[in-house]
Length: 228
Ligand SMILES: [Fe+2]
Ligand SMILES: [Fe+2]
Image (cartoon, rainbow, N blue to C red):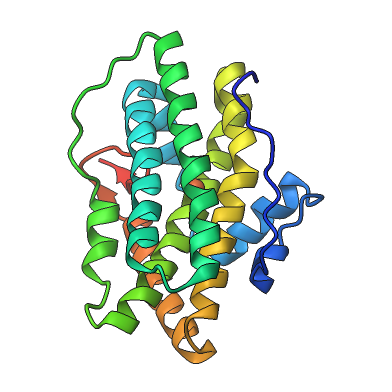
């Protein structure tokens, strides 16, 4: 695609877990790992609803890319003393804004106009469980980031084979970067907390994600539950 960026090599010590998804890893390996990480797959009813409402799907997808970049920017602003975070978030912000722009191109091509959408239940609920104490807050934000990226990757994998070719091919192309974002966030959580705390909070937030994905949801969004 004409708007794919060339990779930039940054000479920085990357966290160990980020290396699990290597450049050579196949898409199948990435998706398998993400599916093993999450506790529940996307329900087929959600996929069916999404295919019948591409307008809402794309508008909310664009919002998600923008919000992912905004989250990365706010972490860059707040955690200047963490060089690993600075590098990984700088790359993430760049990639999420590129995705945002790419979704805008698809919306233009498909004649989809932006319309206001209320915030999804998913993001709101995940945020409610983030602890307010400063150290705890950082690890919770990183774990939530990992789970949101993993869920996005899993949803792209569930959707792409059923979509019209250009959009399906594009969604397939997002699997690698979203899978890496998931691993970057997870690596940063491990860098900034002990194993026991990370495991406990992962278990907690993975259960919240599972509950939000498998329970009925009145509003259809990119990260919504089962359509009612
Ligand atoms: Fe993205
Ligand atoms: Fe992402």
